[in-house]
Amino acid sequence: MQIIDWIVLGGTLLFIVLYGAWKTKGSKNVQDYIRGGNEAKWWTIGLSVMATQASAITFLSTPGQAFHSGMGFVQFYFGLPIAMVIICMVFIPLYHRLNVYTAYEYLESRFDLKTRSLTAILFLIQRGLAAGITIFAPAIILSAVLGWDLTTLNVIIGILVIIYTVSGGTKAVSVTQKQQMAVIFTGMFIAFFLIISYLPEGITFSKALDIAGASGKMEVLDFSFNLDNRYTFWSGIIGGTFLALSYFGTDQSQVQRYLSGKSIKESQLGLLFNGLLKVPMQFFILLVGVMVFVFYQFNASPLNFNPKAIEVVQNSQYNQEYQNLESKLVDIQRLKGIAIQDYLSDESDVQENSITIRKLNELDSETRNAAKTLIEKADANVETNDKDYVFIHFILNNLPRGLIGLLLAVILSAAMSSTASELNALASTTVIDLYKRNIKEEKNEKHYVNASKFFTLIWGILAILVACFANLFDNLIQLVNIIGSIFYGNVLGIFLLAFFIKFVHSNATFIAALITQVIVIIGWYFDWMPYLWLNLFGCALVMIIAIIIQSITGSKPKPAIG
Image (cartoon, rainbow, N blue to C red; front, top):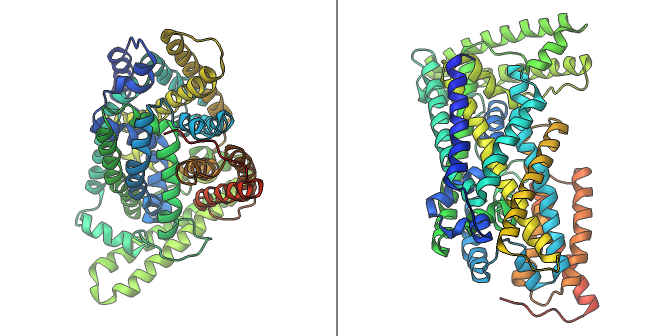
C-alpha cells in the first residue's frame, strides 16, 4: 500500500465516524436514542436495512464464492422479496400499532414475560456471536494479507464503531450507513469496470460471460431436490424465505432499522426497496467474483490465495511437492488459455471446446485441493480454504494506487455498518427487554439513555473479545448464516404462534421453544440437512410441539393484547 491508499482509507473511515458522532449527538430520551426520533425516510430505512445485512463478509466472501463455485449462491436470496412483502403486510403494522421499541415486547402482551425474555436471550446469543464475526472477518483477512496485527485490527474496528454508536444510537447508525453504502457501491462499481478493462484486447464483457459460462460459472438456477446441494432454487425460495422472515421480521438489528421510520408507509417502502434491490446487488457482487475468475484465466493466479498458508508450506518439508503443484497449475492455465481462444474463435466446435475447458477446470480444482492437503500436512491449524482471500488478493495485486485504499475502505465500512447495527440492537434489547422490564424502581428517560450507551459499550467490548478468539470457518458468509439458521427458525415459529395460533398458551410455547432449540442444535451438529433448511425445520418444529403440548394440557390461553 502506498501513502495515497492510507490517506484514502484513513480519511474515509475518519469522516464516517466523526460525521456520525457530530450529526447525532445529544439524544435526550429513549425515543430519540433507540428509534431515532421516528424521523427516518424510506430511502434511509432501505439503505440502513441493506447496510446492516451487507457486512464486510459480503464483500470479502461472496466474490470468492463465485470464483470457486459460480453464480449459484444468488439462489440463497430468492426468498427475500417474498419475506419483505409478508413483513410489510403483517409485522410492520403490528409493531407500529403497539408502539414497541423492540420486537420482543409484543411477545409479553401475547404470552408472558418468560417467553419474551427467552426470545430476547436467543437473539442476544446469536447476534452477539455474529457481531464478533463481522469484526473478525475483515480483520483476519487484512492481517494475513497486509501483515497487520490481528488483535490490533479487531480492537481498532471495534472502537471506531463504538464511538459513534454510543454517541448517537439508532440515528447515528442510520446516518452513517448512508455514507457507508455510497462508499461501498462506488468501490464495487469501480472494481468491476477495472476488471473488465484488464481483460486482454478483444475480450469484451460479452465474451467474458461466454468464458464464464463455458467454465460452468454462470449456472444460476438449480431446480434439483438434492439435500446434499446447499444452494438450490427450492432451498432459496423455501429456506431462504423463512430465514429472511425471521431475520428481517424478528431480529432486532433489522427491526430497529424500520421502527425508526416516520410512518408505517415509510417503513414499508424502505423494506420493499431493500427487497427489490438486494437480489440484483448480490447478483452483481457474485458477477464481480466471476469476472475475477475470468481475469485469472489470462493471468497467473496463486495455488492458494491465503498468504499465511503459502508461507507455512514453503517453510516445511513439503515445499518441493508444493512447487511441483505450482508448475502443474501453470501448465493447466496455459492449456486453458489455448482452449479458451479455440472456444472463442472456432464456432464449429463450441461444445467440444467447452468440454475441454471444464475438464481443465476440474484439473485446476484437483491441483488446488492437492495443495490444500500439503498445507494441512505442514500445519493442521492453518486455514486452507481460501475463498475469503480471492478478492482481497486481486485488489492488492492489480488495482492502481488510491483505489486499493478505497476498496479497503469498502470492506471496513461494511464491517462497521453491520457491527454498529448489531451493537445498537443488542443494547436496545438488553435495556428494554431485560433491564427495564425486570427492575422494580421506575427511572427517568436520561437513566435509560445512559443505560443504552453503557450496554452498547459492553456489547462492543464483548464483540471485540469474540473477534479476538474466533477462528476462520469454511467460508465466513456461510458461518454468519449458519449461526442465524440455528436460532432464527425457532424465534420465527414463536412469532408465528403469537400472530396466528391464538389458542396456544405461553407455557406450551416456552417449553416448545426450549425443546426445539436443543433439537436444532443437535441437528446442525450431526448435519441432518443443509443449514438453510434449519430455518423451516426449527419454525415448523416449535409450532408443532407447542400445539401438541397445548392440546394435551388443555389450559386456557392468556388473552391476547393488540
